Amino acid sequence: MKNESRTVPEVEGSASQAVKAQLRLRELILSGELPGGSRIAELAIVERLGVSRTPIRAALMRLEQEGLLEALPNGGYAVRTFSERDVADAIELRGTLEGLAARLAAERGAPAVVLAEAGECLAGIDAVLAQPALDDEAFSRYVALNQRFHALLAEAAGSPVLARELERVVSLPFASPSGFVVVQANSAQARDMLIVAQDQHRQVLEAIGQREGARAEAIMREHSRLAQRNLREAVQGPHLDRMPAVRLIRKRA
Image (tube, rainbow, N blue to C red; front, side):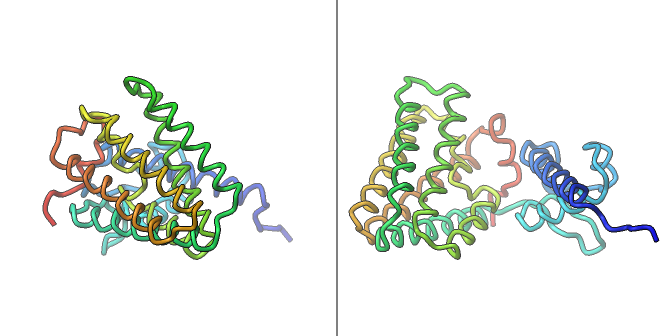
């Protein structure tokens, strides 16, 4: 009798293809190549990405879970658009959860190794900001270090439940710690804003180290206000060349 069960390498290969398809589809959406409101034609995506239908379907489902796609009543998916309020609420939620994470880290006592790594991230950001102007390479470096620092804050809380919820919220469109930081690259006050953010990073790490839970929470709640400001600048300013995904945001709720 023929064994029709799939081998482990086959299953892993399919999962890998789904992840690659998910990343590529996300890139197409956020780059504006698949505009807001457009219907996703599965066969067209299969041909475009050169991947079979099974991983494409898995990728589409994951992007719906992320919030970038919406399922259509008659089947298939379309690229979602978002109101300013949608995005502002997502950023507010992230600030609330990160504030809770900072407070728990301070009250419970964060692992020394996590605090040390967070400090190394901030030292790396200091080195980036020491440059008189940020080129694309420096800016990419900042984004990577910034995201890592925020991930370490979540880890410092020692709460798998909270870590899962934070992972869920930062996957929401535009809600990640660096979701709108690209706007600052187009601003005359770019370095000033990043320096303010870095000062808040330093303050929250100090508050956690000194076991000041309420202070740590308040700093992270305030920290999210910078992202709210960047959101307002993104939808009002001419940033489509650097951030075409802004087209997905409607200016009215």
